[in-house]
Image (cartoon, rainbow, N blue to C red; front, top):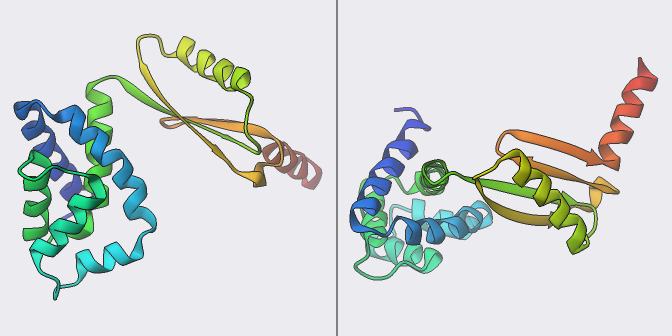
Length: 179
C-alpha cells in the first residue's frame, strides 16, 4: 500500500471519529506539537518501531507526547495505530489530520522566517497583507529565525512562497552574473 495512502486513510478515520465525538479541535491542538515532536526525536521512533517493546508502553509514550487524556478518542486511535503496526506512520497521520482539519475549517498556516527577530509592527504588516489576500481565512502564524537568510524574510502560506531575503537576492545576482 502507498505510504501516502495509509496516513490519509487513518487521518480521515480519526477526523470522522473526532467530529462524531465533538473533539476534533482538541485532537487538532494535540497533534500540532506531535509534528515537531516526532520529527527530531529518534529515541521515540526507536521505541515505537521496536518489536520488543509492548504495545501498552508504546501507547504510553505517545500519550505523553501528545498529552491525550486516558479514555479519549485520541488515546483509542493511537493504540489502534500501534496495534495495527502502523506506528511508523504516526507523524504522517498527524500531518494528514492537521491538514484535513485546516482544510475543513478554512485555516491557513503562515510561516514567517527571518534572519533576525522581526519587530512586532513588521510581522503584523506581513500578516495583514496575507489576511487581505485571503479574506475569511483564519491564519495560524508561526515565526522563526534563520540566520542564513542574512537579512529580509521568507513567507510561506501553503504552497506559496514569498522570498524577500538577502540570501535569495544574492542567489539571483549570482545567476545573472553567470549567464
